Length: 143
Length: 143
DNA sequence: TCCTATATTGGACTCAATCTAAGTCAAGAC
DNA sequence: GTCTTGACTTAGATTGAGTCCAATATAGGA
Ligand SMILES: [Mn+2]
Ligand SMILES: [Mn+2]
Ligand SMILES: [Zn+2]
Ligand SMILES: [Zn+2]
Image (cartoon, rainbow over all chains, first blue to last red):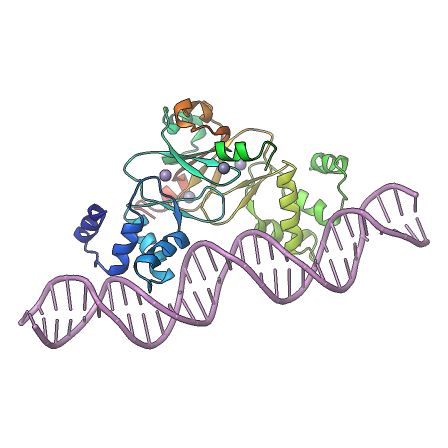
């Protein structure tokens, strides 16, 4: 993701080894890692990288709009580098697996003016929940 | 919410002072309290009630389908007693205020078969984000 | 009233996330 | 190429929501 690094450079970012490694971990589509998962993968490439740097860098990437925070389980936050293609998420209610999905209708259209209460509505996130094929195969009954 | 209490009784629940008080706090529509907010309000009515009882009871109410968990900020979980009317949430990105909203289209309809990846999709949650009128009035610029 | 299965309690514990203070180094200036 | 400096990184402490548990209390049936 030297594309990302180039953009960050243009924004006046100091290109440190830690930031390079985090950008490399976040390279690839359809990735939704937690901060600790990013850290674990970053450590493979740069053993001394600290958790704080991972949190700092992820937070800055979110502010810059290069990554978005996703929370599908109400517990851990995940980081999604796929900001170029508008998409929503489909989550397995058993195992937590996450898939990117593209909708055929704009969710903002489903919120009528009379239900906006004077808000300047800017964004909608939609999360679908269901059982994935693997979990359905592994277990016929409920979780 | 003696309606709720009656239903819980029918389910074999013991009616303790703590559970009565929690049910009373959750009475009323359009309420989205955190566990600690429920606890703070419950303490007004029953000073010795513990945080553990609030968490236990909220968890049981969720399992029984009498309350739903809502997470709009990726941090704290909130508890929503409005399970009788299907609705979604509109959240102020400045102050976190939450409004219940009713949609004109079923969000499940917007997820085509080709984007379901074999999942048995059961549910969708939609959250809208924007600035509420109060925050817009208080501050013209961004947060 | 008594009994006991069930509920409550305080406090310790977990874990993600944030903060702190001291040390490090990228990159612009020369 | 070397110097300088403030932005960056680090390990460890701290916070705060949420969980767990052994001891204690009690709802409600016998
Ligand atoms: Mn995604
Ligand atoms: Mn609600
Ligand atoms: Zn699954
Ligand atoms: Zn607001």
